[in-house]
Image (cartoon, rainbow, N blue to C red; front, side, top):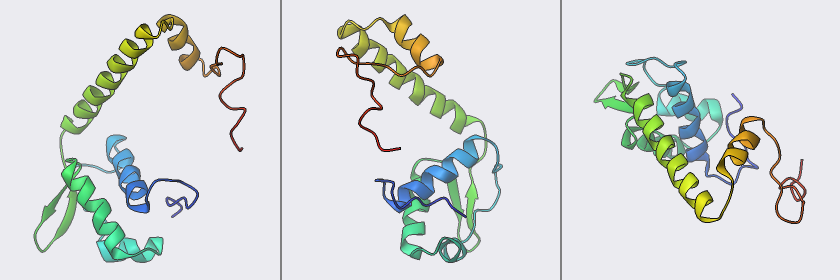
Length: 134
């Protein structure tokens, strides 16, 4: 399972939690489905069980997973997760729009660029990928 990227700046527990959040939100993992045990997942990923436990704690705190004492961790049910995630995204978009308008950015052009995956250039004409390693 290649879900840990050691070049990623995020902590391993966060990468694991984000991976499971994506699986849950996309419907790959269904409500009330049992999560892998901490010990089994730690062995599978060759990582410390404490790292897995920290990832699971984040999933529980964020409402993606619940615990049944003596049985393990299970995927939380209902469309509430997806609805909450959509609300969070809408808030981020609204905040971004407000900030863009304050900066004088043409939001229609920005939306068009992001929708069409066009690279956004700064005032100098240099695109934002020029300094990235590929």
